[in-house]
Length: 385
Image (cartoon, rainbow, N blue to C red; front, side):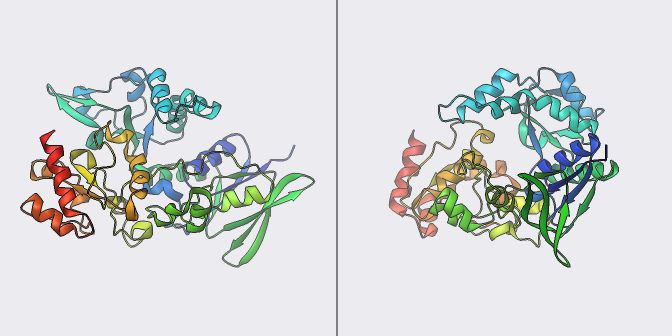
C-alpha cells in the first residue's frame, strides 16, 4: 500500500499537532501556510502558551517540565486540578447547558495531550510570573492554570514546527488555500495561491487547521453581530476564515457558537493586529487585564460588571464582550495609587494610553467621554461599600 499524503492547512498549534500526528502515523504530510515564515503560527504565536489540564499530583507536573531542577520547585505547591474541578469550571461557562461530547473529550484527554506533546520535544514551565502567590514562604498556584509552554506561544509553535520537520513533514509558506478539490464525493486536494500563482496539490486527506475568522470584519458582522465590527484584533491578520469558507462551500454543516469567543480587554487605541512592527511578546502588552484591582466605567460613568467576581483567568476572556456591549463599545479602568505597584507592565508599556491625575475629581474630568459627575458618584459609592 502506497504512503498516504495528508495536507494540513495552517501552521498554528492545532495544525502543527495534526501534522505531527499524521507523520507519526506514517503519512507524508504537506503543510500549507498563508503567511511568510516570520508571521506563521497563527494566533498561537500571540498567546502565553498556557495550558489548562486536569492533574492529581505534583509528580504529574514535574514530568512535563523543561527545568525539573529549578530551585524554586522545592518551595512550590502545585496543588491539584482534578477532572471534577475542570468539569465544574467548564459548566460555569456553559450557560446552563450540560457538557457536550467534545468538551468532555477535551477534559478527559487534557493531561494525556500534555504527555504526548512532551514526547514530541515540547516542554513546559510553571507560570510563576502570573499564577502564584507567596504564602508562609511557599509559592502557591491558583486557578487551575499551572504550566505554559517554554517560550510562551512563540516557543510552542517553534518547538512543534521543529518536531514536525524532524519527523519528515514539509511546510510551504505564502500558500493561501482557496478551495477544496472534491472528486467522486470525497476531498482529494486543495487549490491555493502560491508565490508563483494558483496551484493544486492532490492528496488523500485534508486537515483544516485554519478556522479562525476574527481578522475579517465582514465575517464577524455576519456570524457574531454588528457590534463585533468594532472589536480590535490583537492576533494575526491572516485569520480571515479561509478554512471555514472552504468547508462550507464543500457542503460541510455549520456547527458551534461563533460568538463564543475569547474577547480580552485591550487598549482602546491599539491598532488592529497590535502593531506588526513589534515582536510577538510585546504585541501582547496591549491587553488590559488588571481590572480586578479597580473599577471599569462605561460612558455613562457606571460599572457594568463585577470586576472581582472570580479569579482573573476565569473572567478576562469574557469581559471584552461586556465592554463591546457598552455605549460606544469602550470603557475606562480606574485605579488608585495603592495598587499602582501591582499593575502589570502592560499598563506602563510605551504604547499604552492612560491618564493620571492627583484626585478622583480631576481624573474623571480628564476622561472626556464619560459622564464625570456620575463617574465620581459611582466611585465614591464603590469606595464607601
